[in-house]
Each structure stands twice: as C-alpha cells, then as structure tokens.
Image 1 (tube, rainbow, N blue to C red):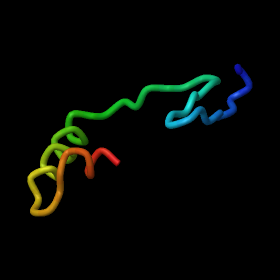
Image 2 (cartoon, rainbow, N blue to C red; image 1 turned 90 degrees about the vertical axis):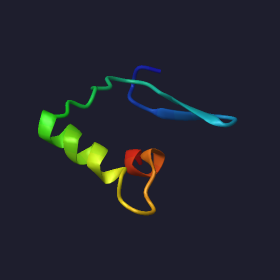
Image 3 (cartoon, helix red, strand yellow; image 1 turned 90 degrees about the horizontal axis):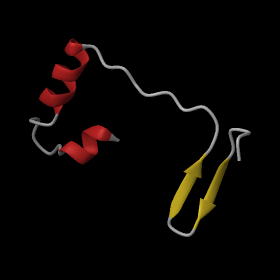
Image 4 (cartoon, rainbow, N blue to C red; image 1 turned 120 degrees about the horizontal axis):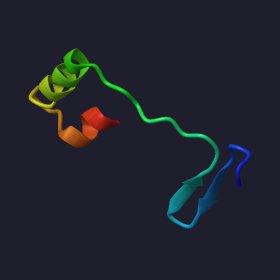
Length: 48
C-alpha cells in the first residue's frame, strides 16, 4: 500500500503513501483558536 491509495476498512480508513504534516504559522494558530469562541462553533467543527 505505498502507491498513495486510500483503502476503507469497516469504520476507518488507511491512508498510504507520503503524507505531509500541516504547518501553521503563529497567526494561523491564533485565528483557528479564535474561531472556536464564535457562537455555535466547537473545536471539532473548526477542525473539520
């Protein structure tokens, strides 16, 4: 599974291939955290 495909198993997914971590600037991090304080938003909603 090193060809970059996504395979689904029951309730989860297995991602293969090269995956890169996201890099957030300090300004982006502040904006993301501030969004969680808006009415009707939660951390999980902002994360999506």
